[in-house]
Length: 523
Ligand SMILES: NC(=O)C1=CN([C@@H]2O[C@H](COP(=O)(O)OP(=O)(O)OC[C@H]3O[C@@H](n4cnc5c(N)ncnc54)[C@H](O)[C@@H]3O)[C@@H](O)[C@H]2O)C=CC1
Ligand SMILES: O=C(O)C(=O)COP(=O)(O)O
Image (cartoon, rainbow, N blue to C red):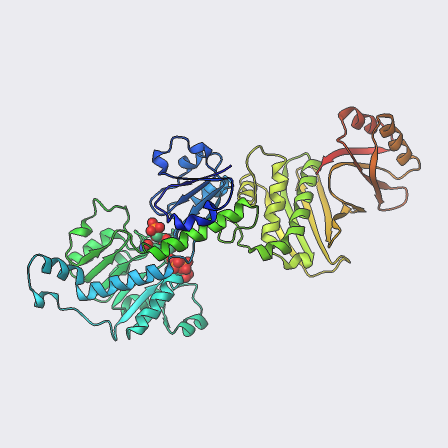
């Protein structure tokens, strides 16, 4: 049974993909009211539930956190990543709703609609108190031209506004295509009549509009925040509302929600909504449906496509990656068992068609498989990179355009404290993975099952002696390959069996004079 806890109000209809599937139990209850958090495999949230490290510690079975919306600033993504928990969101399900809400806020702000509405309801008729401004011909400054910013720009242009944009990741081509003016931040501050922010809340964007930067705006500017509380500093806003530099402010989001203690709500020129950007039937259905489908993919063992902490990959893309993923896991596990020593760095080199796939995913998969042999915690592609770095293991990925004779290959080199080891493998369509070289010895074997690696001197009789000892212990050899670099030098043997070998057999083999090293490997 896969158990899902839905902590915030999420559209029940949108949960349909999960409700229709078998062996999934869905409980709709706030985390604060649930006593047995440990039983859940998935957690669904919107912006209200704070997914802290402490909460995750109470949920040791948690595998996936689904944010039915865009912003993940209420989730400690770094901790989730460390714990190997996938975090997904619904990136575009609420774009239109939020853009429409922002536009409604802008129109309300310049025409004083909320204030006029209150006044009329108080049986007043003060037409001269609510004289507004036209949007036509004004300059709207958009900070952050992502999904929402772009939709907002389209709406502003339809109202005859000039649209100026600051977004450090915006290309000239894209701004021309959308028909907006690309500016640097200072220019936008100096020129815009209305400034609206549409970035995520990050270390860089926290307080982006602050005492200093708001001071550079035009006198009489309107400011709008329908993205995240904190992108516009609330204390600075109060200062500039008080001295009249800022004419009006529209806020859908606050530094603390609900905003019980902020002075901002005392200003007549401030209009506010309670984080309603995404609160439409359509957006809620979209986001719940999007994340439910993703979680179902996860349950079915398929690739999720909207993960915040995994390389994004479609099912189609994963089909191409899958054979190399298997090969990488086999090599990672083999090397970890073979090299029983602390490791300093891991280098993985891709060649041929292996170099054309999503290599970042495969590299993480290999590292996860390597670390799994050494650590007794949940390790997967989500946390492999972080855990390796925390343990001082450097990992390097190289993509080569050389051709060493294989249509594809993957070479993993591990620098340990005492020695360096290296394995090269290839994936042959319809035939599977093959290891073609171990520490420079050419060989050819299928990396699977109960294996025995033997390093020995290349003298007559070794194979016979090994066979005799195994025979004496009633061990049947399933496959056997040998490889050497030169006649009479060092050589290796790779054997596979139907059952694991026990220690007395390994000791007996090690006692043979011509044998240098013996290692049983389970793949
Ligand atoms: N009020 C509400 O209910 C909702 C609020 N949001 C908020 O809106 C934000 C934006 O959403 P989307 O447009 O879907 O995200 P997006 O990821 O499509 O766009 C964000 C844009 O911000 C830009 N950006 C990042 N750092 C920047 C910086 N320092 N200066 C200027 N631009 C920067 C990025 O390049 C990107 O183009 C979300 O992160 C979320 O916090 C989203 C949905 C609903
Ligand atoms: O999607 C977002 O980032 C939002 O801010 C929407 O928040 P909500 O899901 O309405 O609590």
